[in-house]
Length: 252
Image (cartoon, rainbow, N blue to C red; front, side, top):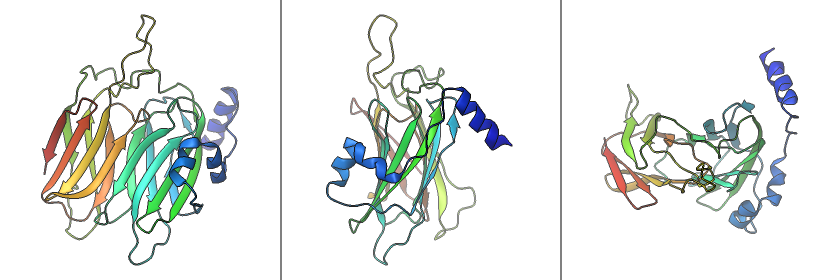
């Protein structure tokens, strides 16, 4: 019953987004550029995304790779693209072989109803692509994402480790930092736009060795958040870098 209520709501709000095929990526310039001449497979990626988002400024997104890989193969890159955002690039993940499970969570901004594409690449240069349609009722690129985030810089980095982690068993780690993530598209009330101000990069390392890098674009929500999996939880560093090259590091 709840499903049909959502469908009716979407229709009343201006028509439901028709289901997209992952092959529709051919019309997205940024995806074409990234893939070059590589032909992606269209199975293996699961996208967790709501059917309807009432607030486009903070849309939960989960990405899981559930396909098959060769013995020496792992997913080393996942990129997210939004077909109708002002900037189609949303967020990029660089994963090392030390990431035991390819399951990532974050929050993104979507400007309108559209198709979200996720492209994964392995260290052996195999590619996968998947897509999901989403209905957005209020644009997320033209509004402040969090009225309590008033500071223009980064602050209060947080890391949540699993409560009962067992070394060798994969468990989720979550990290977040306070930041407005101004897109540069929001009206300043004086005929101009609020200047762009973004966190650009999160680097996660263990004893100086790279584990995960996350590149944020204008499609990332205020107070950027990332969830990912590890199976070793000691000697970790989380370093956030903004457009002004300022850095904040949290260690565990």
